[in-house]
Image (cartoon, rainbow, N blue to C red; front, side):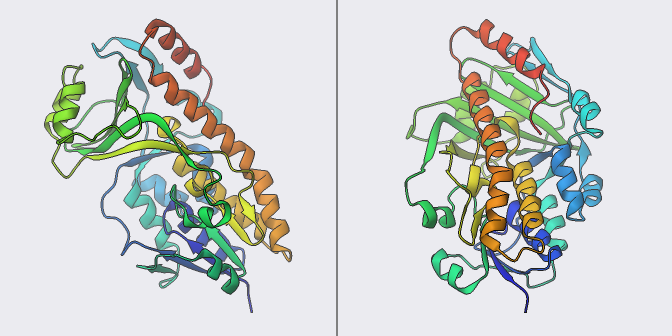
Amino acid sequence: MGMHAAVVGGGIGGLAAAIGLRAAGWEVTVLERAAGLPETGTGLGIWPPALRALDALGVGEQVRRRGRRQSDGVIRRPDGSRIATIDVGRLERRHGEPVHLVTRPVLLAALAGALPPGTVRFGSPVDDPAALAEAYDLVVGADGIGSVVRTALYGDRHPLRHTGMVAWRGVADVEVATGGETWGRGRKFGVTPEGPGRTNWYAAVALPEGHPPPVDDRVELRRLFGDWHEPIPRLLDALTADGVLRHEVRDLTPLPSYVAGRVALLGDAAHAMTPDLGQGACQALIDAVALAECLRGADDVPAALRAYDRRRRRPTQRIAATARRAGRLSQARRLLPARDALLRLALAVVPPG
């Protein structure tokens, strides 16, 4: 009989891990608390190394077809003046292909479609990871920033950290020509074209932990950003009451290891990072492929997991630290000319991938 893995979490990292492990000869069961795949969701930038991970999983071309190439963007001040240009073409010249934009539901559907029916057990929350470790040869914690698998391993010794930012995000029925961000004093607003008549948007404001939420997010967003340059006011006017998500931005205190015995963590469960580099989904995909490669043909599962930890922990924690620094830069309230100069310098270096 083959080895059997339980993957906790049926998100991007969990589904990718299931595909990779099955290709490596494992039987896999994915346990997902949600009732099914989401039908709505915002867009994701899939960078070339993550596209190669999708290629290894056999769904790369499908994602390219369903997505769209990301074009260059501009970072501006609230009055519309330019701070810097986001040169996506430079990344393409380095890696041989561009960043592709794809919605979360499309990516999840592509991954789920590569698994046999019944592999994912929806409506199956996991409350006792220790019991899984007794029943399976491998347990993969791919259960996100609030991971119960991570908590079972570490308790509260490596907690989530508030980053000093509150974020809003959503999709609006507005079409914009180009994407980019606008940086003000302790706040920023970003837009990414999704397709004809649709735009992904996000906003972030420096606020202390526990700051009371507004009565109406749309009213608060108009107060904060309504006098900024177009198309921001036009986009804010198009928001619907159920089309705005708000959350405090947190990341994870660096873990000393992503593995313990026959248990492995990946994605946000291992290295939840701020969204400032757009690398969360990408790194989860790369984690999943690396995990499967380390376990292919392995007789000693704990040793294979230690190899995975050596391969992925330092790179992902380095990217998470860079994302945190980028977030702090966007929180600046003083010395804005110096902030803008630092931003231009940072964009002159090809981001991690």
